Image (cartoon, rainbow, N blue to C red):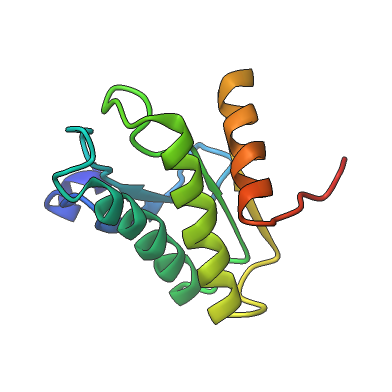
Length: 131
């Protein structure tokens, strides 16, 4: 019901609703780009998804945020560049806004996705906290 009040969400935009019966108090909705070979602005549109989601969460004073790998499912975005964009945009945001978040989680569905995120972390010299 609350989603109807959002009046849609353009590619790269982010909007927020309550979490209702979810464990999360809030849900940020974003629309990632459909992959068309990378020549139709897809990297910038995907980057905007992360930037706008982080900015919205920061603006609402949320201390943690979790992301799936946006656009890599039905929209066909290749996992490796998607992971680099997700981690790179998040790292840039956190460096520009230190102390904004206590926790940022990237939810990887499957070992292949996890491997791509680990590789991307090494490429941009991010080091995860070990469990």
